[in-house]
Image 1 (cartoon, rainbow, N blue to C red):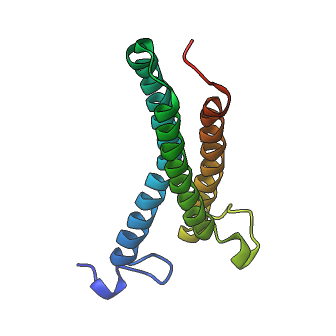
Image 2: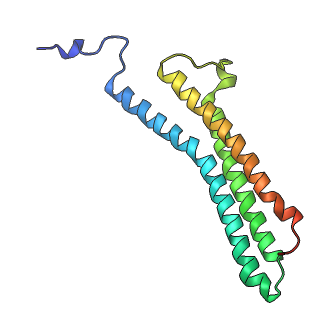
Image 3: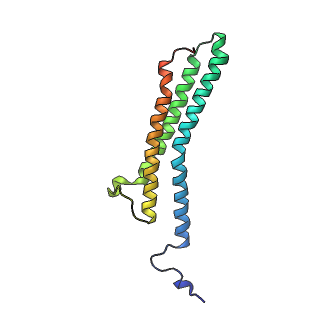
Length: 144
């Protein structure tokens, strides 16, 4: 029979710590996917709606201004959401807290900070992608 007091040594995490670490890692993995997912949805939705608008509405002679306004509002909302995700990921990365940009250790804190770093970088890429997806609104004046 094993002694329950000896089942965990000083270096192994407790079961409740494992659950908390898993919950934080799970949240971090979701945070990694949200930035690129928002970018992909913005890209597909924007060009899909523009194609339908130009084929159905603009073909009847209506102006493209409502489409441009709606596209600008949605783009700003997506950029705000990605910016918020990037800020949360920056805080998780905690670079300013310990000035440690290497997370080579095989412990919970290093994994947590690495996931924050990855999510932060993906947020930057997604932000730039949404900006470039939104540029046609600035330059395109009519459906042709």
